[in-house]
Image (tube, rainbow, N blue to C red):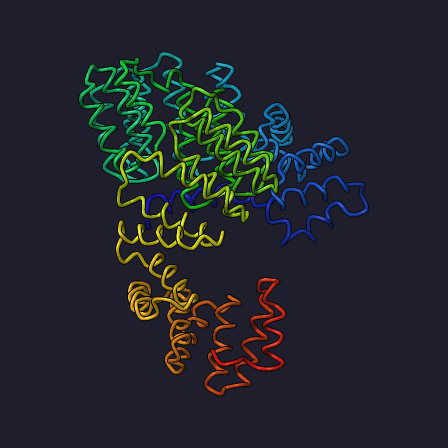
Length: 565
């Protein structure tokens, strides 16, 4: 079991009761409803429904109304607390946390937020008292020693803080997490040699925080006057993650002579980073709700924490809570490296919301604002292609291709995609040229072999060459139902019916829910005299909702059979 998986399971175990109560009401809602039956809590039930559907803001609104009706209800208080946290309503969350604490029904999650309140207020003695109230089970046993070290530093008790950190490092569990935060700690208190050792050890463990560690280590190297080492570090990790905007900015700033600035400028920043790290590990396993709560805690401790805003926006987008995602992305400052990506995600969210014109307008503006970034041109092509605006898609992809100073092997995909657009726009000669160019750049690419060869078969040209290409594609992708279907259909078109049936049956087994493959198999069955089976396949194809224009054709085949190809 990997460290990341261990971490995720522990978080689920510790936070599960608090968080799952909000999201799993669908399975135990009857019990919850019985607790409030015969009471006027339509607001509460509406809040549960909104929470199940990931509308966090609406859920928080309804729970606030329910609390106004019954401010002592512990069940509503608990669920309201986590919703207020995830929606960033810190004042409301604190009021609920104190109420739960007064009622002696708070848990470690609540106590942790009360600790953060005291820490943020720089009431460090009270912070330590609150810290003692947090349990030590699971992930809290990892957090508490880290929190304590930073409180002690804030109090000026650096030696005690170091001793506390050293004790934490004696236990080998979750070592990559600990090493990264120990590195930040030693870096902050000026023990740069220890910090460098910890950064180097942390980088040996490839995981969720590798790039963040490289960023922090690079800042330290630069502050030590070791720009050459920092440059090599950035280059090494940009080779692994060429699109990492933060490392790219760090490298550019260094080349431009800019000053290296740490993102840990206070004890509060360090605590925010602990939550950000935890959220990163969780999101690797797609555990979104606890990750969202941790990111809100991070935002509570560090006001302009744009990395946390960006990750939270991604979580909300994955949850289809688009209003929340848009709000988080809009918080990111224009001068921050993640601004471009946040704006591009915003444009994609508009498309997901059915606001195509707004999406395209946003992308076009982004293209004007960042003319050197061709990623938005690819996005413009994609959003138009996905919405059957093939002319506009072709123009965008062409701009992308024309912006390339040198065409490389990796660019096969843009020619392939533009070829699809041209084919859909009935510009076959242009499409064929792009498919051939894609194969020139990436010979034996199965998707390109399949699309080009299938198109040739469909047009009745280059049949023998198409068959060989499809046979090669099947060799490369023996479990791809679509490619096997293409070979089966090619065999059908050239009259090799027994082989066509053999391959089309395989294709249907691999892609049972594709109407076109079922339709093809029906045609092949009819050709070999298996008429009952043919009509069964055609009826099944109809049930899978084929293209509207083909429904009548399939219905005719069911009634009259299929003419010879």
